Length: 482
Image (tube, rainbow, N blue to C red; front, top):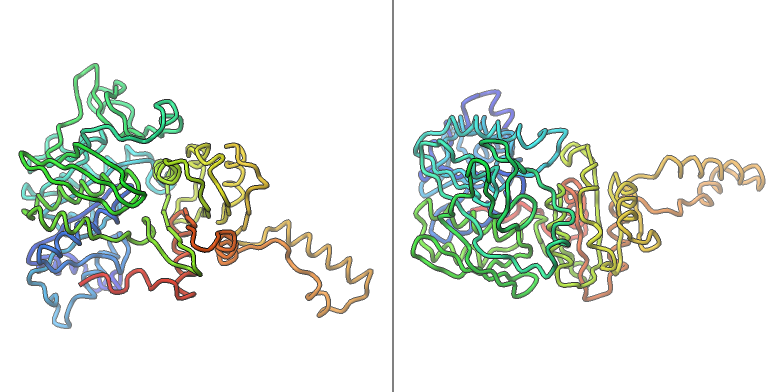
């Protein structure tokens, strides 16, 4: 819809966006865009605004156009544009084109990690695109930047408008030693953006996130305007934060798993403060939020609980594994690795994932996806016994087809069976397809227990579609936006 509308009227995005009374907020970055967007939307709704998101479309230009067009009237004006604000999740590569059409009031950058190298290239190429986008912004835009990510923090250098930084001021209690925590960390930003010398860290959280400084030129992490000063993990789905902004102190409970959601809550809080939102809706919006599509989402299926945890790059997968195994509890798992275009066709990144963390921590383990065998090999090298894995490829393997053909011919020759009998005799003993992978994982999970599904992006879509077909969950866009 958005693509067609833009062909008919190339300036339709800019035209419709200007009718929003409270303008637009954009969120971009490698990880955390969807959850941060959801937090901000919940906060602003609690503050009395009508919130529009690009949930119905993609986070590319066409998807953003669709989100506006479906809310337009035949006369070319937005319906109910008063008291409305748009929260737009934006693809990293699409940012320059979108900010040219929709100058945001607030632009949030979450983080930058290596992701989909065949599409984005290395992190330096993404930073270059982001700097081009920032150069197009008016001084009235506020940048919300992650102080703990040196690639993000540098985006504020020389920006004439307002910059607000957010970060974590305290250590994160992970329950593991320093050597173990750093074993498979993927450092995508090792050197100073000013002089090229390698950063040193006074406090290291994960990947290149932490308190860094350059010993050569003195460049260092900016002091956050909004900061977490204390973290307490109450349960798997409950993280208690002490947040400070200026001389104000508040406690917020994040109802989602994973240390990465501390940053998502911080980014949402900072963006909301930039819009002038009071603390009350910030606290209530975050604390009453539910896990969004595939980001800790909880689904009941046949007397069992499923938790969907998207993992689409090495840093994201490492943090999901840390979330799963931080307390030493063995889990029922379904891993899905796809190499479709939306996932990134280069899956070599799985060798940078700390799958060694899962050794001895899997009660049951099913592996599926277009690259299930590659993932099984990686897990075998990590030290997981191949007999403890159930491998369910998404398609029947060529070798299986050839074996079946040979077997069919042998049966026909030796037993004299007809074609109909042959088809009934020759049965593929090895299951394949996402449906069978899901069935196998659920069957191995006892009633009342939890199956954790960790897919790449298109694997998540396939699993969700299957669960929708079975009536376990509605379509993910239904009933979410005002």
